[in-house]
Length: 348
Image 1: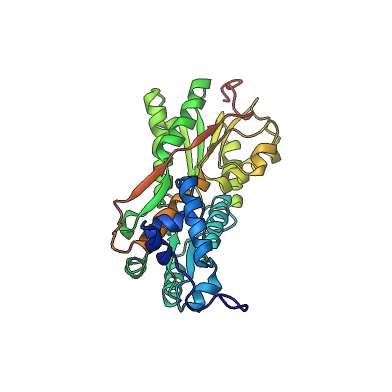
Image 2: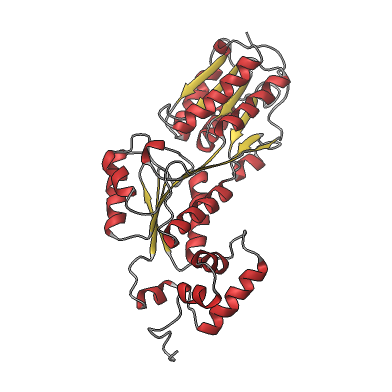
């Protein structure tokens, strides 16, 4: 190695793998401090990497002539805490392996999404992570099939690529069941667009919880709105102005939860004395609002780590094919705080 940096013969991950007689992916995971790799293996790989002069950064990759040093991430909205958390986790893992994370915002527009995927492919990204729009175009599916890709949080089976999501049906059924056990029958549910698979699963969970408790589905006041806080605020206002308003509300998304809480506060509704509330996600607001917001929290850090693991496996082991059949589901955490209680009285 010269004083100016690594030489053109600097060791690669494959060199380390060959020297140790282990898989390329094992070396990659050890160098990225993967949680499922033993400390003994991590030390063995790191010692070999140091001895062989391995330089784990993008500059070294470029000097070795590899153009594929970027990972693309396409999400509908980075203001959504769910996706900002995912971006942070993925950026950290990319950095550890010498990749650069390139972020694009689709606004859930299929045509914008297509242009972004095209740009990523033209840039020869090593892989793509995508939270796909409901109306993903045929050309987008074709382009994704030609590069290592994984779906993040939102699953579209028609894309034909692996996915990692949360157990939406089970999570929201549990939330509704909690309210029913407390004595609630008239429940408001503010969800995202019905075209989203997550919306369908969450609504089904709430409906089945009510049906199993022999509560007529007419008692479920379900509203579908765009995934924006102002849309949720307006929808919640509408529910609160009903002559026979709900005694409890469930928000089907973290952004929708913020809008709902704003409307509740504006109307001076006491929570949980006059209205019980269950949110989604677990941002700072949920821990600070009153005595804390009872919420359904998807493990987005674990989802992101699993997504990266699947993507990395496709990049490092291209002969191992993955398709839509590879679908991993992680369960929700139900966090009980201070916004749920038995209904004070049925509001007529």
